Image 1 (cartoon, rainbow, N blue to C red):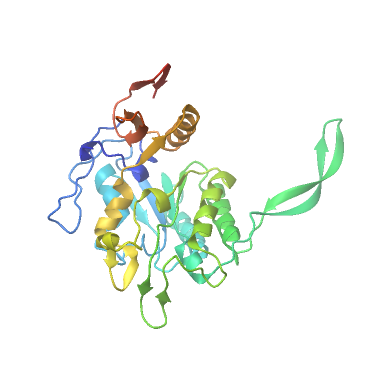
Image 2 (cartoon, one colour):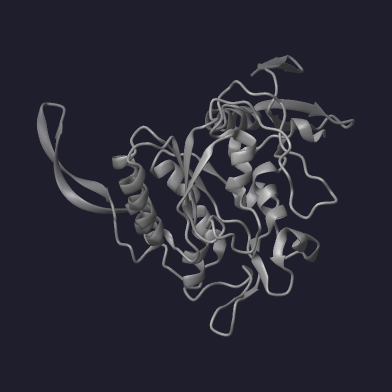
Length: 328
């Protein structure tokens, strides 16, 4: 497919509906992808905060250019970068407080890309809620004692850490769009004898695989009513495969941190969804169009009548499948 119609999944979440179908292009002779065209959107000049760990850190850990810099070039937004190398979700809370202290409410969206360090440290997952018996008014009128669930805030477990961050952001940034990103896949990293990190095929010291932490972040989307972009799935980055090492810092010592090509792929990867039924189509369409209002769906039928749906920055279309017409 022509790259000028490529859908940027990450940027799509913070775009308006008025877009032009042009994005950055990769020049094969250059090690660092270059953004050659800017998408015209209402996000030009808007302030977007980026919280997270080393992949977001503006010191460029393992790369010469970060994903948020490509978004700056493609969308014209202003990145407010607070991510810090090595930070867990406990650190994200401190980043959020610093954002509030320095910028107040002068921010339009907040993106959180964290969780891989919590996995590496073996942080227990915990629960979203604790419960307590509470009197509540019901029809009658009368009162009953019912078991009330309350977000638990124990920062020694993963869900408690996320609860603390999200509760703070919801209270202090009530009108801003908050977006969660799942950690990408990770392979081995050797940063010295005291910092050796096995690939994700191995569980952490709590006996948990990284998938568990990815799933918790996806759960947080529903718990806290915020969209999540599952980069673990849609980025296409899979460092356990030797052929994918050109996207990472060092084939031998660091398959944890993406290089510039990897960061570019994080925000420009094609998202192709198989459509096996009308029900699946509707679920996928509704979910993604709510979260990604700038993206439009192009449906293609193969020679054997299989349907695929590709999300593009393009014009509104109507597609007919048998006796059903989809407008979007």
